[in-house]
Length: 444
Image (cartoon, rainbow, N blue to C red; front, side):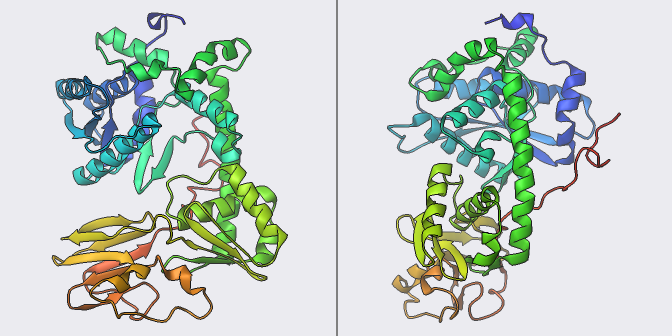
């Protein structure tokens, strides 16, 4: 590998270009592990903030994961460096039992959960991550090795939402060597995580192959550009899927979704795969979509008979002669209860937004679980044209002295001081134009 000092670091003009889109935000959180990538992101953002009048407020989040003895010291080192650059920093501790296997993935999920909560508590509207071009290339290759389709090969998006949090990745087009060179030029040190060199992890193995692949023309830049092209194709499919859902989906306020089979039969297979994948992920309350192989098998099963039911990704999908119905499964991992004491906004089961302005205690539980509670005799009839079990995981709002409320059942309005709404199946595209549209074209 060529020494980092032979690569140019990132200067003010380039940083201004990379971070300019952040000016539309009020406050951002910066995820910093202590490694070179995230430390470079933090330092560059701190410098950019000093010279940019309309830069957002910033707060650094770092996690003491407790997986290595030095983790606490590394987190404190990040905090000291952040404050030296004029940035507030919160050290978040990952407590409780740690996973015995797949530790890197478990640690990533735990870090994200802690940072998402910290971002909400700080009033931030976006979390900025330090993923770079080499990360993008590795992700593309890992997903290629798994046989991913168009969406998987799109790799990481510059902007995405996860569990209600906006994720921004401004460095996806920057090589890691340039981030390291940026720190070397400033005399800033960083921490090294030994797991990043452990060949037991698939990503490390792929990373070690990169020089050989680059020698054959599969450079990180070329792989990143391929991922961008796949992302364009995925975006086009999403526009098509959005039109189908907007024109034909019947979405019950309590969560279940129904589509006419006649509409689905006319769709190209790739569009149908994306539509069903999206329904399973959103209706099932999942972070990630199902694997493409499982999805293809599911569609094969649904095509073989006019009356089939299956489960995948936390959702039940049923095909009848005329309809395709999808609802959240209650069985293996049912939605957990949510208890709210005081005003705020919460996400329940990754499917519903709950807004509370009252000071009274409010609880949200799955409808199937309500019979085991003090309101045990409460029941309302389910809509006659839907399967009864499709509403087992519907949210029920409980408040002292007020009848339980379930969207689409009984009273039209929830109790005073409470609002509950189903999260959208698909986000609205910013535009359906292209590079010939002046709204999309850059300066000439």
